[in-house]
Image (cartoon, rainbow over all chains, first blue to last red; front, side, top):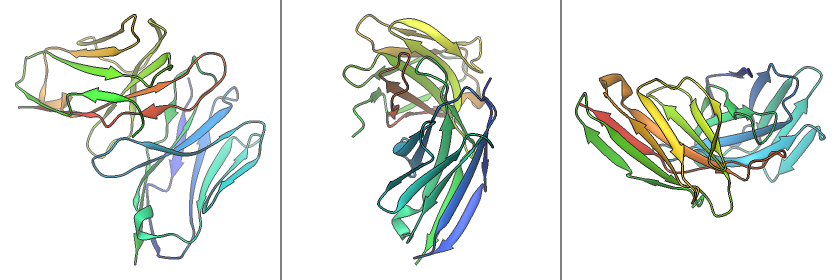
Length: 112
Length: 114
């Protein structure tokens, strides 16, 4: 089955800095890679996703890149704000019939 | 609001008991996933249903079972509860099918076993 590794497990940045979270996956059949943000006491919220037919996708301060050859994808957050502080999870799946496999999460702390 | 509804939000029960967690997926979604999140742990996949049929099974204990009903809501049954079963249980739903679509999570049920 699919295995997703996520690094780092914790990340502390100053407000205004950029943050990068990296994930690798094992199943070459995986073609959909979502990112979720989980705030304390809440369910994970989808913030951006990318499919295997594109290499990069941006949404305001958030971007995701995908390297299918190397089987890794990354989340980039620019101009970080304290409200970006949360746990971020990457995930991968091969199809809508398949399991959505998650990384272990990255706790991002943005200090004012 | 993701559109996925989980009840109850909180549940406190004793060891050895049985509980049922309920999930109503977003309107139109056929696929339902159940995940367990323990303290300082990631999201552990338990089981997936698609249009009433079991599609995938993760590290789900034999004491746990689930089903998806004709109206597409799903229930996760946890029996012979142990202290270690205390966790957040999340349900997620997606359109499912051959094309990947976004999965949306409910707010979770926090289970405390005492």
